[in-house]
Amino acid sequence: MDTVRATRLDLARALRVVSRTLGERYAWRADHRHFFRIGGGWWVAVSPDDAGRIRVDACAGTRTVDSLWASAQDHDRLAGLVQSLRDEVAALAAA
Image 1 (cartoon, rainbow, N blue to C red):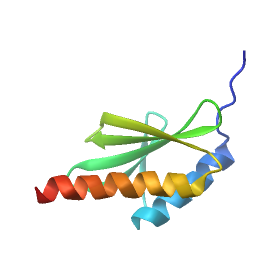
Image 2 (spheres, rainbow, N blue to C red):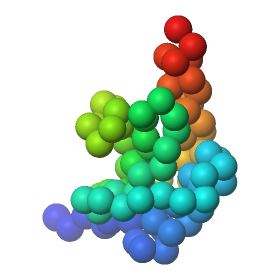
Image 3 (cartoon, rainbow, N blue to C red):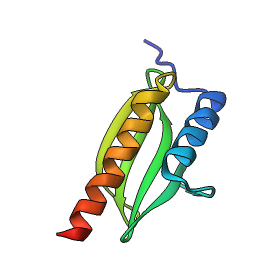
């Protein structure tokens, strides 16, 4: 059984959504993931995944702490996931 990975175009669109949501113009790339700073040593890592999904990892430094997924075409869900992660990190920093 073959699985369909999100395409490069899907990834490019997803990266634009994440960039706009976070207000971050730049990301760095390592291990096939694109990292966006969300503050306090935390990052959101975005990468293509199987089944036409985009994977979103919450990372403390480069260590993955949690992973979430959105359909490559569901930009609203993707933006919501990223916003939720940023809000959670902000809440942790305020505690």
